[in-house]
Structure formats: structure tokens, C-alpha cells
Image (cartoon, rainbow, N blue to C red; front, side, top):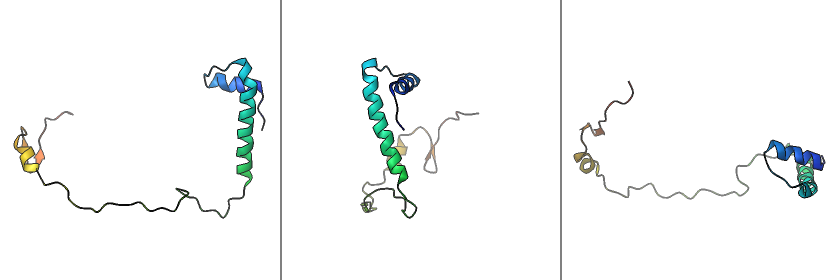
Length: 95
């Protein structure tokens, strides 16, 4: 699929982009090359290819699940205006 200057001008108008008249021909050529590449990629038979989430076979490095801070809930709740059973009590906002 090849684009001409009129197509690029219409696309630019729809996208609300200002493109100089002198640049329309260059943009048309570049966009046509991109569309040709997409056509080539679409023509490739991918029937037996399994979809990938990432092109590299890598495993996520996980840190050990260990507690790094002491429990300070009692100290934090000591300065709270209202608590009950380890929870903060707040005024009702939604009726």
C-alpha cells in the first residue's frame, strides 16, 4: 500500500498535526516504506509459532521473603485518635 502526499495531508489533518507542504512527499515515502514492512511481516506464516511475552527466556530474580522491619503497629496506633482490634477508626464519609 503506497501513500501519496494527499493521503499524508489528510492523515495529518485528522491527527491535528501541522505538516509543511514541502515535507508531505518525504513523509509519504517514509510511511509507505513502513506499510510495506508491515505487509511483509503479515505475509510470514506464523501458524506453528507460540506467542511470547518476551523474546528472551529469562526468569525473574526474586528476593527472599523475609521480614526486614520490626512490627511497630502498637507504637503507631498509640498516637491515633481511635483504634479498635488493631484497626484505625475513621469517621463515616459515605452515607
